[in-house]
Every structure is written in C-alpha cells, then in structure tokens.
Amino acid sequence: MRKLTGTLVAAVALVALPHIALAQRARSAAAAPKNEIGVDLGAAYSHYGSGCTTSCSGIGIGTPVDIRWGFMANGLLSFEPRFSFNYISGFGDHALSFNPDVNVLYRMGKSTARKGLYLTGGLGLNILSGSSGGVSTSSTQLSLNGGVGKRIPMESNAWRLEGFLRYNLANTSKGIPSSFQLGARVGMSFWR
Amino acid sequence: MRRLFGGMVLAAIALALPASVQAQRRAAAPMGGAKHEFGVDVSVAYVKPQNISGGIQILTPVDVRFGFVPSRGNMMWEGRLTADINTVGGTTRYLLTPGVNVLFSNTPGGHRRGMFFGGGAGLVLADGGAGSGTAVQLHAGVGWRKPYESAAWRYEVGFQWQSDNANIGPSTIAIGGRVGISLWH
Image (cartoon, rainbow over all chains, first blue to last red; front, side, top):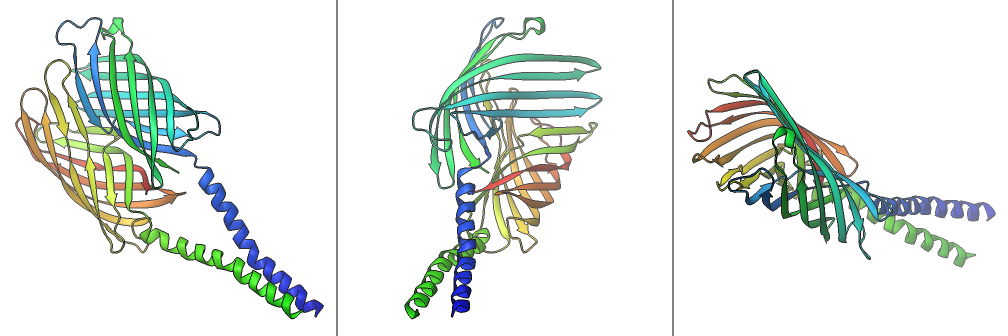
C-alpha cells in the first residue's frame, strides 16, 4: 500500500512539473520582450533657415522613414536607435547617405513599454558623401529632435503615433543651412 | 484510502488538462495563429542601367513589406511599398513604388520557416521635378526564413527588371539580395 501511495504521489508530481514549468516560461516570455521594432509613415513641414534665399519650406511625406530598433528596459527610460542607409556606386563615382540617430523614450504616468504616452528626445547625424568626375565631397549635419507619442495596443502589437520637432544645425563650412521639421510619424511596433 | 486515491487521480487529471490544451494550442499556432508577416530589410544589389556602367547599391530600409498569411496552402500574398513626396523648394517631387509579391512556400515549415520562391510586379511612379513618369518592375527570387525567437530572419536573392521611361531613366536590371527580419501578428 505504501508503495502504491508513493507511486501515485510521484505520478502526480511528474504530471504537475511540466505544467508549472510551462506556466513560468509563459509568464517570463510575456513579460520580457527584448526589442521593439518598427517602421513608420512620416509627414513633416520643413523650413530652411540660414542661407536659404528662395522658397524655403514645404511638405514631405514618406515611408519607410527609417528602421527603429528599441531596447526594452525595466525603468521609465529606454533607448531607441534609428537609422537609414543608402549607398550607390557606378561610373567610378558614388553617393552615400547615412542617418544614424539615438532617441531616449520616457514613459509618462501609468504608461508601460507597450501602451500609453511617452516623451522622446534624441540626436542624430545626416552624413552625406559623394563623388562626381573624380571630385569628392562630404558633409555631416547634426540634428536634435523631441516629441511626444502614444502606443495603442492592437492584438500582439501596437500602433505608434508620434509628433516631433527636429532641428538640423547649420554646417557653414559646407554651405548647408539650418532647418527645422515639424511633423508626425505613424507606424506599427512589434516586440520580440 | 480509496477516497485518497480518487482525490489524487482527480488532482492529476486537473493538472494535466491545461498542459495538454496548451501543448495543442502551441502545435496549432504556427499554421493558423498569425495573420500578417511584417518586415524590413537591408538590400545589396548590382544595378545595371542600359548603356550605363553598373554599380553596387546598398539600401535600408528597402521598403515596407506586409504579407497576408493564409490559414492553409503554400501560397501567400505580400504587398510592398515605398513613398517619398516632397514639396520643399516650391517644386513637387515624388517617388512611389507600390508592388505585389506572391510567395510559394517550399517546405513543411509553411510561411514561418524554410525555403520559398517569390515573384511579383510593381510600379515606379516618379517625378524628379522635370516631368512625371511611370515604369514597371518585375522581380523573382528565392528565399529562406530562419526562426529567431518569436521572429525570423529572412534572406532572399533574386533578379529585378525595370522598364525604361524618359523621365525616370533607361531600363535597368538588378541582381542581388535582401536580408531582414520578419515579425508576425
């Protein structure tokens, strides 16, 4: 009888073990995505300042704006690199455009990393390089941006809306005027 | 004693039931769970316009791709889009490239993993400021998805042809590949 009881207890423990392990795994998987990945449609009003003499403003709309790859954090702050890259060569010449950017996201109020309001600010570079007929040129422009956004959950993902103001500093040695952009970006965020 | 055994058997059944349901759900999810495949890529290609020397192009993000995952079958539709409209400087310039791809999964992994063949068509609608034009793009390729936690890396190599247009440029071929990440919802 004691043997039978012992066997039954062991059987119950064996049956219970995978269930408990599975529950723990499910909880940790749901609670700990590592990255927020997304792309957006962007629209902005742009205005060129110093050095601009003719028509100095206009509207721009585009997609994909860049790739944003956020790193999730337990605290209120998280970092989000964003970038776009385009290089083409031919005829012995080339053109390069590289726009790396790092933003900090600050969750507001009761917001979480998956929903709610956030504030963001960051800085980026606009690196251009080209050559034509053997003559090479290159320039770098620093930009600062700030904005407010909101994540709206949709099934396992979220819509992300963000209004922003970006200021691009002048690079006088290269003849690039300062400019600012006021706009919004709308996209989808995925977690993994 | 009989009551104790009965209780233990009931407890075992109660504990086993959710685990087996969860196991069944996990088995079904890869086939029918996700509705869309969404991804962004880096592309590298040799681009050769007609009568002009060719060169290498590296680009990211290439486009936005949004696939519709079927609940069954090995064929899947995928929309791709880039858009750039700009009025800065008083002149409207734009470049729109909508496209449709069809993917045929070639492995039992369905549309989540393994090899696939793809082909499609797209339009290039452009105005660089000197006049508008439309060109047609045709492309075909072969690719692989490799699961990476809840996402998947996606590799694709292929060939693309673009028709000529006076305001866009001569006909062009491109041979290359794209590497990116796919996410499902």
